[in-house]
Each structure stands twice: as structure tokens, then as C-alpha cells.
Image 1: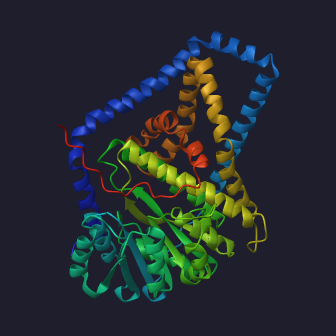
Image 2: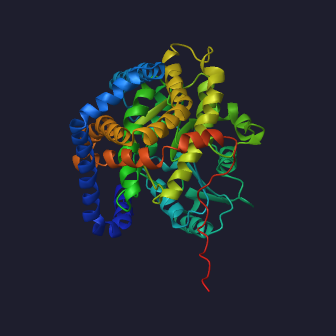
Length: 467
């Protein structure tokens, strides 16, 4: 049987077969991006007297002065928080893997809905892990899929035999209910949840489980999520850099505080006792009177933090997951995430400012306040952006592009140091893409926070037959 690493490489190669032809297109996009950014710098230089006149005109009224002071305060706060994360990042340390005899028993739960062959690949990659097989209970649950997902799960069962147990929900009830069933079937000391479109490296499971052995205060662990289909399409390629920064930098910093704010659905581990302490509250959770059918990962993380446990991040526990390749599917995913952020920030605020844990709590509160600042400022920033687009379009565009050049450089330098220089350049086109096409996500998510629905994972609708 081929190793997990070979299986991952084979899967990645198969995903990228049709991407080789697009290399020239991608290089053109990168070249166009930097031409645009450099042009913004040049335009700012040549039009500096005009921009300075606008600045002086704005300073002659109260609103202009308030805007300037507010802008400086926001910039200082943003830079201060970034420096704070940087200090925490350097304090972060990966928990070393323990010996086989020390490893806890695991229950691995893979919920699946309309995943097709991907669920088979996920299950096979988990089976190839270098974790003692006698300590693994592998469960997969089909949440009422409408495609051939169940057939692929049965194929995995045929190959893995007693090493895999598969179950089928009578109807689609949502990922939370599928996980709930898996938790109740679980016999392991640690539960690990893996999305059904994800591939793990062979040492991922032992790296995820080790913190529970070394730290009795550890209630949950977040895995390191990377993009599997980053060579197949442009959007995944751009998000690959963003994901690396979000996990390897931001979550490393959060882990130094023992307060990772979200254990991702793609790969997360939970102490069994911590899960059962909050399981019924989790499955019956509501928001604005409606059952919560999104944000199950952030909700579970919150409920475990509330118990006083620490939530850590394991940088060496890799999972490679598919992300949307089309704009429509991408913004639906982001809307779901942002709605969850609104809901769970409210939930976390109810305990984070109390005595929820022994030891320092200020860092956790700073992380939460930063989350709130992004939400509370989303409407004022959007209105301000629209004002400048209408009143001073040239100033807005050049200022936005120069800001992207400056702040994206931090992500690009981080990625270049940790991974590859060429791939790091994708931080710039992604920032442009997000600024001009996805800026509306957070305001919209706030206004629709009570809405239910997963939004993605549905089968494509057949095109209407033309007459």
C-alpha cells in the first residue's frame, strides 16, 4: 500500500493536470497585478499636489479632522495588534509527538454530503496514517447525500473492512447532526473531525493527539489547513497564501495564549470529556430563535474555551482541503463563515470577560475585541469607501492599491520565508480581488446573521433546455 505522502502527491497531481496549461495566464495575472500596484505609486507621485489640495480642503472642516484622527487611530491600532501577534508568534512552539504507547485512543469522524469520490480519498488517506491501528475508530456518516457519496463510502468500507464503520442518515439534517451521531458512537479518548474533501499527511493524527497527552488543560486542537486544489484554479491558488498566513501565523499566535478562536472543520481534535460536557447545548444551540445549522466548529471551540480548557494549534498537523474554484461558491462560503463569526462573537462575549479560566485572560479578550472591531467597523468603512469612490475616485483607487502593496507584503514575506518565493506573490492579487469584489461580505453577513443554510455543497442544477 502506498504511503499517505505518496497518496497526497498523486491526488495533487491529478488535480493539477489541466492547470499546467494555465501557467502563462497566471504569470500574466501576476505581471498585471504588479503593473497596477506600481502604477498606483506613480500616479500618487505625479498627482501629489492634487491629493494634497484635497487633504487640505478636508482639514478645513470638523468632519475632515475627525476622519484624519480616526484614520490614524485605526492604523495605529492595526499595526499595534499586528506587532502583538508577531510577539506571540515567536513564543509559539509545536507540541512534539509522543511515543506510540502514550498516544490516546482516537475516534475519527468524517461527515459527508454530496462529496462523491472525495470522501473515498479522505477515508483512504486517514487509513494510511502512521497511528497505531488498534487505537483508531474510524467513522464516516453520509448526511443524506443526493449523489454517489454513499457508494464511494461503501467502496472504502470494502477496502478497509473492520477498520471503517459507515452510517447513513435517513435525510439531510446538516453537518452538526452528523457529527453529533459520530460523537455518540465514539469510544476514543480524543475525537478528531475531518471534512470529507480533505487529505491528511501520515503523521497528522499523532501530531493532533499529542497535545492532549502533554497538557491536561488542552481541550481542543486545531490542525494546519492548506489548499489541496491550489494548482487547479486561480481562486484556490490565491487563497493558498491567505490560508498559510491565517493558520501558520495567526493561529500560532492565538495558540501561544491557549485561545485559538476556531478549530477548523477540515481538521480538529477534541478531548472526549470536554465534548460531552457541552454536547447537548451544542446540538440544541439556537440564534435568534432559530436552530444553528452553521458554525459548528466555532461553536464547539467557544463551548470548550468556556469550560476553562485551552485550545491549541499544531502547525505540523497538515490537512489539505478543497476550496471553491468559482466566485459564487467562494462568496457563499465566506458569508457562512462571517455569519458564524457574528453569532459566536456574541456567544463568546458572554463568558470571555468573566473568570472563565485560571491564569491570564487579557490576551483572549484582546483577540475577541479585534474580532469585534472588524465587525463593528464594516458598515462605516463601506460607507466611507462609497463616499470616496463617488467624490474622489482617483484618490480612492490609488490609496487602496498602495495600502494593498504595503499590508500584503507582510503576508507575502511570511509565505516566502516558510514556503516558496514565487507562490508568495499571490498575496497581492488576492488582496485586490478581496478589496474590490468581496468587501460586501461582512456587512451582508451582519444583516443576515439569523438566516440558516449551508449555502454550498448542493448539486449543480441542470441547465434549462433551450428551445
